[in-house]
Image (cartoon, rainbow, N blue to C red; front, top):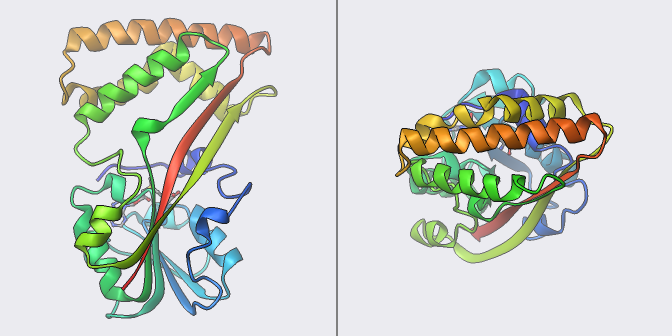
Length: 261
Ligand SMILES: C[S@@+](CC[C@H](N)C(=O)[O-])C[C@H]1O[C@@H](n2cnc3c(N)ncnc32)[C@H](O)[C@@H]1O
């Protein structure tokens, strides 16, 4: 199981759902009494669900250290074997979970088993992430690195809309909506933005993905060449930050697939 730090989740999700919740409109949150957020992490989506619904919202995650960051009812458990009776919830939701599972269909079938109403999956298409940057080389290099990562990763990190999985789990009346999560870096820079820039300049950020990238078709020599270009780009990011000229905008498309049991 890929591990996530609380800092990574809180930072990459900052501002998520604050600009618009239109893409959640297909979820029957107004009438729900019990909602389950599977793979809740630090509870970023759990908090949104609690704001949007009068229901008791339960957060479940395999990683207890992440759940400590969340408040309210929380349960440690595995998405593939949910510790709940059949029909225990009105709505079962996950966000950025299926893209990390080796067999997402097993999880979606479990969601359908414990739901008596709806199942929803909010999943990114990581192959469609776009970046604009004041450092010219950043967007093409990030695209290249992402492509090599996606070649090597074992799960379907480009899942996006989960129509096929939902059909295979016999979910009905399936709808798909899109939510673009936009993240910007601009002055004054946050500590996280400064750390991320340093990780570009040292190559550490890319090195943490080395094993996955090499599991694809990339040779160690090609990886080292990419790392050199990446570090040069990172140094330019830091120079621009020192002059308060660096700006970056990243858009991650999330697809909200909703079906009924
Ligand atoms: C990318 S994070 C998403 C967290 C949160 N939903 C969000 O969007 O911020 C994926 C989460 O799924 C959890 N996870 C991974 N495999 C799991 C499994 N088999 N059962 C339950 N949780 C799992 C991880 O611990 C992590 O918290």
